[in-house]
Image (spheres, helix red, strand yellow):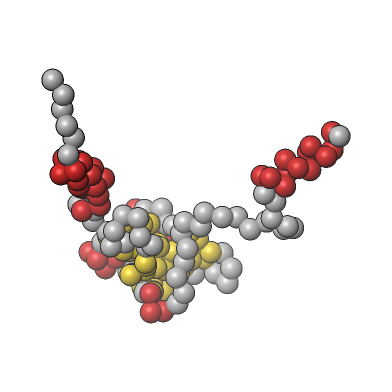
Length: 149
């Protein structure tokens, strides 16, 4: 008994393979939140004159701190949108909740900066700049071969 594979069954198999491979992209939710996601109620509980310990209990550990020109704690968050899983991502919102302290470690000022207030911070930089010329695998291999000749 012989089975004959027709063009219709090959087309159906290709369509099924394409549907399965793209199936993961269809349910993708493109909104990703990074960093410290601040709660409005918690943010409103931080008052002028609170101690650094009270602020730490309320907000938790800051994303980063500054000691230049006074002590400040920064809580940083970003909302990144990507319409499809393999497409380039775009920052749609960025928040920096800043708490500034005086010399006695009391809250002196509070600020809530948004994307409109400054530049986008790159949280996930995948490259580290290096000094000198870029070196490739082939170049290194050729240099090592010439060294042994």
